Structures are given as C-alpha cells and as structure tokens.
Length: 135
Image (cartoon, rainbow, N blue to C red):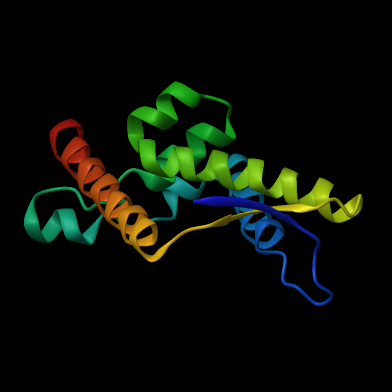
C-alpha cells in the first residue's frame, strides 16, 4: 500500500462530500422526525426468523442522531461506525476542498484490494452473527 498526496483534478467528483452529506442528512432526518413509526418490520426476519445483516440500522442512526453512541453501537455497530466514518470523511473533504489542500490517496496492489474486499465481507458476516445473537 502506498500513500500519495495529490491535487484535486478539475471536475473531479467529491465523493466524500456526497456520501458524508447524505450521512448528515440521514442523521438530521432521524433526529428530527419519528422515522421509526413509519417503517414496516423487517421482512427478512419475518420470513426466516433471524435478523438480516442490516437489522437495527434505522434504530442505530436514530440513537446516533440523538447522541447516544453506546445504544447506536449496540443496535448495529457496523452501520454506526460507517456513519461516523462518513461524517469524518465529509469534514476532511470539505476542509481539503475549501482550502485546496492535497488529497490523501491510498494505492493498493491487486492482492491488497482483494484482502480489503475479503475483510469487508468478513466484517458483514461478523456483524450478522452479532445481530443473530443479540436482536
């Protein structure tokens, strides 16, 4: 893995601003509206009797929006950490965009890319096992 600092290319899409902005919007909606009363129960859990890999995501985001980090982590740790990472990535990209700072880019070899993907699949499976025994 190599870490490279590079300038923003003209017309480059700022994914950190987009995804982080969506995460902030989701947190704002979850904190402002009673979203839990609008949602139907989990269809996957109704059909198979076990929670799906994303069960508890909405409740997690609602807890996070209200500042209850530990309850959010208990509901769905992976989604909670992804939302926190998205907001931090948004802030980093916003500062880098406004002040025209160099961007940090990680360059992975093919083998490292495969390892990262396998690790992400492993995280989702570990999350599913956690949810199966806690929800």
